[in-house]
Length: 261
Ligand code: F6R
Image (cartoon, rainbow, N blue to C red; front, side, top):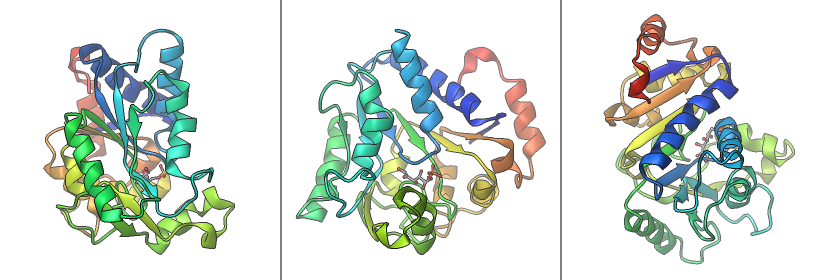
């Protein structure tokens, strides 16, 4: 696991966008795993700017989102499908239908989850997965206690996650859905490269467990310690509880430029 501590979200966005730009040049038909939430916004801004500048194209690329609330109407502004279209997909040049997400309005939820897993497989798997992390250590919406071998399925959101996300629902906890569909931890682990972004003090405890804690379903992101290619991009506040912070800084400082993420 590579830990990179940078000064702010915009710098993190640039470093992550560099990795995605390199991937798209190497493999124009790359498959991207897309997270919603605030953590990846700077990455999407930077990718949209690079697309506008003609540096990159998503015309042959595909995308799969991580998760979706169950039961939010198709026209609800906080539906993750709507959010990802607004913050990223509609700002670049993906082909129509190239980005898919779990169907939170499906009548047959288990069948929809299985179909989503099949679609990811059929696309050849995810080349680069962008992740945020919840204050309770969730990735996707794999809440504490999630099976470390889980695949896409329905989950109940914890009260903590609903409180954290109430800011998107006019601070009305009751308006936050109670259930979601999410890629499982094993689904996420199948991505070839995982880039996780965390900023702010509120993420420091989860980041401490992710990087230096014991692997445990109580902190689901810790499963990433078993992944061969994970990059964790942090600001100082999110890194503040890491014991080996000086080592991570020195390692990144002395990294040869050709190596990339
Ligand atoms: C979003 C997702 C979540 C978020 C996490 C952090 O698709 O799967 O795991 O990444 O809740 O959210 P933010 O970035 O808003 O702090």
